Length: 137
DNA sequence: GCCAACGTTGGC
DNA sequence: GCCAACGTTGGC
Image 1: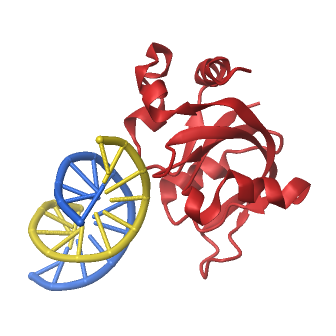
Image 2: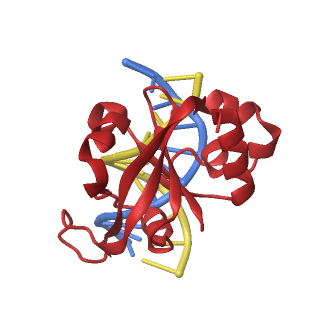
């Protein structure tokens, strides 16, 4: 299983919104960035991801699961834009803020710490383990 | 609200 | 195909 990170502005679509979708989950549409699209293309059903709140909170707040692999984005005119579907699995008992991630030696190479602008990111197994420990899981 | 970082666009 | 201009993201 691989691990990922999904960024969202909570005032647009936050963790609570994803939880409200239940098991049906949400199409992660609207991504118009090749790098982020390519990350989504690499995802497999069952992979896990962090749900990160950008701008407001700036913290990873929950765990999500990839429930549908990359397919054309229903909101895009051009089928070259693809996205996956995700659902909420469970909240992090202790959200991991960007500040804590930056201060954690094990996370110095994490994409979140180094390239804040990529909206969908890969997370290594070691990084995932470190985040889980920091989150109280 | 500002601005740095970065991706995209379009003129040449 | 280069690169300057522009738009967007997201931390501060």
